[in-house]
Image 1 (cartoon, rainbow, N blue to C red):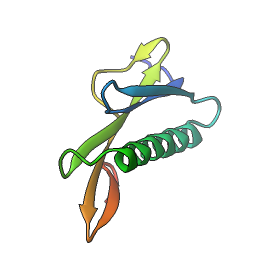
Image 2: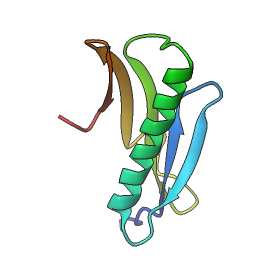
Image 3: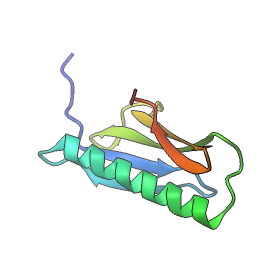
Image 4: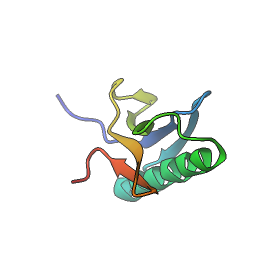
Length: 97
């Protein structure tokens, strides 16, 4: 079964209501994913600065791969947790060691 190349990434910040933005993959899917990750982190950081963090760690955001018109599955490609350590916010993507 041939795979369809990823055409875009749908980034989601898990606020109420959730914020979402789509990033076209174009010819450089890796760059688009980096841009989506930065957007999620920036939005999560802005939200946390405006509100107190509801729990620690906080499931703050996710990025989904999109092929064609819809997301490939209900599962996110990567997820972002935010927690505090020694009084500082730590942004931890689940695919980083």
